[in-house]
Length: 268
Image (cartoon, rainbow, N blue to C red; front, side):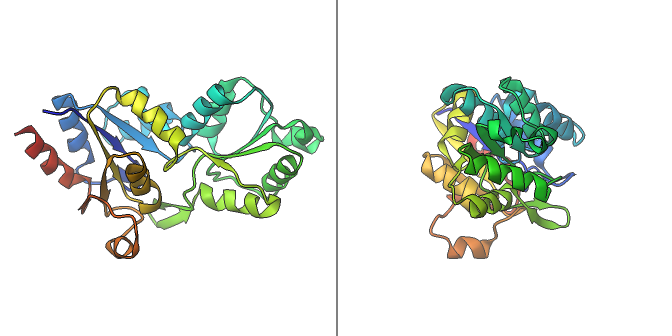
């Protein structure tokens, strides 16, 4: 029997905001019991893997940090591998700040920028920032216009939360794109840097299943890299969206809960 590996998106698949989606824990427990390799891959960079592990633990899902990949982690690994060290200006949450600190290249903070050190910035790295201010956009714009490389963690314009859809990193990136006329390098799903990291972590598998809730990131990502595209309807994209889309998932499930039936059949 061929070995499968599974990649799970998180927001809208495993939980919405701080509420676990029914069946998520049982599915992960079944994978652990069966020895099926899996990775959590989120385009949300506001937390790092340690922070996400705590969040999952609070929902009864116990997984090691090394199976959790954020767009912040993927951004750090890409920068380590492909770019030369230089000062970084970060627009993002705590998780992205932690990943950029781990690079050890030096971060120009807002106080530094106010004193004119935005001119030293070589990389403006942008993710979802719950504390976004006009001043951050201003110094990001100045640095990019001064020649700094513009890097976006992920393209998601929204993300699912308890009250509905909130503005995502893509909305912030769009503001900087508009103010600089510069196209950013985007790291997260559906792009290759995210695939490289997760494929390496999954190890040698014959087939990869991508479980996601967004057509424009998760399902495009799966199709682009030859994965089985499984969409759940607990997040962003709906059945109506699928009807209108040129990109179609291979399988649509009401939620992650129904994935257990697919895995049960696989094991029979």
